Amino acid sequence: MHIIQLENILLSDQTPQAIVKIADFGLARFFADNSELRTVCGSPLYVAPEILDIGMSSETYTPAVDMWSVGVILFILLSGNSPFENEDEQILFEKIRSGDYSMDDCLWDYISAGAKDCVRALLVVNTTERMTITEALRHPWILGVKEAEETFLPSSLIEVKRARLTGRFESFRMLQEEERLAKEHAKSIDRGSI
Image (cartoon, rainbow, N blue to C red; front, side, top):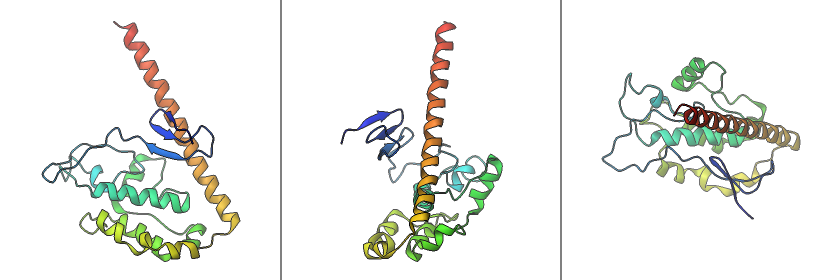
C-alpha cells in the first residue's frame, strides 16, 4: 500500500475509504519529568479543560491533557459523534470545562460496558482522577479482545456510524483546504508588500 501525504495528514491513498496513517503533530513536544507545559494549543473539540484555563487559574498542565484527547478520539471512534460539540465556542468550552457529555445516542446501546468505562475514565475533568497512559494500557477493555468480539452492532447502525465518521472526515478535509488557501493568500499578500 502506498502512502500519500496531504497537507498535515498522512493517508494510505486519496479515496474516501483511505486509512489515516498519521495526522498533524506540528505542536507535539517531548515531555521531560522536570519540564512544564504552558502553550495554549489544540483543536477546540479535543482540548482538555485545563488548557482552557491557562492564564486564569493554572499556569501549566501535565500530559493528562493527551489522555483527555484520547478519550475524545475514542468516543468519536465508538459512536461517530464528538462528546463535546456546539457551534458557539463559549458553550462548547463550558461543556468541556464541566465534562458535560452524553452516551444517550442509540449506538451506545450496542457499545460494551468496558468501552464505556474506558471513555468515562478518560473524560474526567479532575486531572488527578483521569486515567493515565499506564492505567489505560492495563484497562480490561483495552486488554480484552474477547469482549470486543462478542459485541454486535446491527448493520443499520454500522451505516449510521460510517456516515457520521465520513462526514467528520470530509469536514476535516474542507478545513484543511481552507487553511491551505488562506496560507497561499497570506504568502501572496506578503510578496506584494515587499
